[in-house]
Length: 625
Image 1 (cartoon, rainbow, N blue to C red):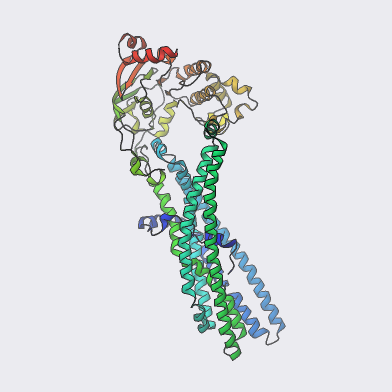
Image 2: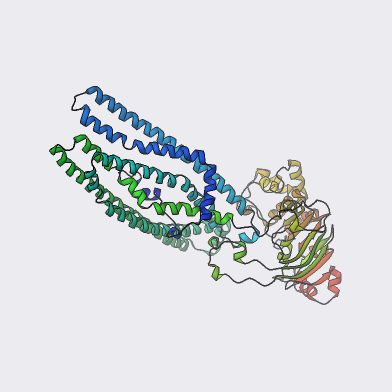
């Protein structure tokens, strides 16, 4: 009854490291049926895999029976040739068993890795099609867990769990039949200790479930601190406000809890491992005692006794696995349920079945009686993907936008101004359809954007935000994200128009320079100009700028404003404006307050009127400029 890797590894292999939600949970028929659709796809491979398992299980009893033949027949007959032949046969069976084990492992890996590929691709594709509201509520770590841990758990249902159950059942059946055939009395006697063994296996299995769940939670907590502190923003905050000793103390306390639960897991597994070995040894002693007496009495052969002892050692390992078979099955299959939970979450913003392509060219943007509130948690995400309980979340918010009517003509520049919380960013997020309005319509060239394909709308509308995101990749990779087939000539033209080509040329690696996590190796102005270059490569018909120059110094602002002039030229533009330069050049200024348009007009027209714009101008813009 050897257990490679020690008791802890043994229990990990047997599926004792399950989630606490698994206990007592029953998968619905719908989930089982969906799992069946994946099984059908792998039907030939699974059939071959199970055939190999049967062969492996049959081989289990071959060697003990050959030992019996040597002792009972070849040796008493002093037939050296028979001894050598049987010994060679035993060696050949061992080689065959090893070879078929490798074949079985290859087949298991092939099925499992193909399933992982399929599920990961499906989940990634489905998640990246969710609305932006989904990502604002969802805990990133929980999503990563679905792509990694749960997908691996689903894979285990097809390979190790399925194979383990089938293989262990067949092995146990064949071993018991063989033992009963050799001596039913000794077999029954050896099974008298079975209830003690099964009770211990079940009890330790439940104990380890709780401990490994606690361990997973503690590991996640410890890993979260590492992830939060070791990204660029977290490290900066830690350097400015934190103290190394305090950080180490917090981390050490979490690591100590992980260490303690790890010791408890090891000890629980070790106690069971020791108990199982003890039960096996007692059972072996019982077999030797009864069998030895029978051999002396002449009612049992010595070879039979040795075969019985050898078979006994192959009896308790499959029993240990099957003692917690329900836990194994539920642990593996519940992962499918968690993966399906994500796949069943429908995006709030999606293409209509009859969506059409939105044509390129000069664009007229209209907002007709638009009303909007941010969606609730239940509308956009899953409770299991959020870090706080749904009962702790605020109720549905009131309308953020209340009957917005606005027309932006082709080539026109419209500036949106207003106090903080007025709904400026919300309004601009509706045009690229990051959200859908609760009521009303948003049209481009008279076509409701909910009736067009997302890919065609993305080509027409381009956005530069206040803090433009950059991937941890090269400048080139971040630029061509907007146009994968862009040529070097097109890239450099966009960089020149964005006033950033000289800076890039001065870098030792030029376009191949890595910008760092979130672009932190670039200054704010450089990052914004790079974002504008990305926009120029995309060449949209409608441009939306969300406070693109709000936090730049005067030198960088001048460069960005020059870049923006190129980006906005001959394009329909909507700009959230915090700077006077942007406001002055606007064809129309729209003043928002509490989700409503309270004023519209040019800069001069609005200054001539008393009202919110004049107050904002006098309090903010004049002091700034």
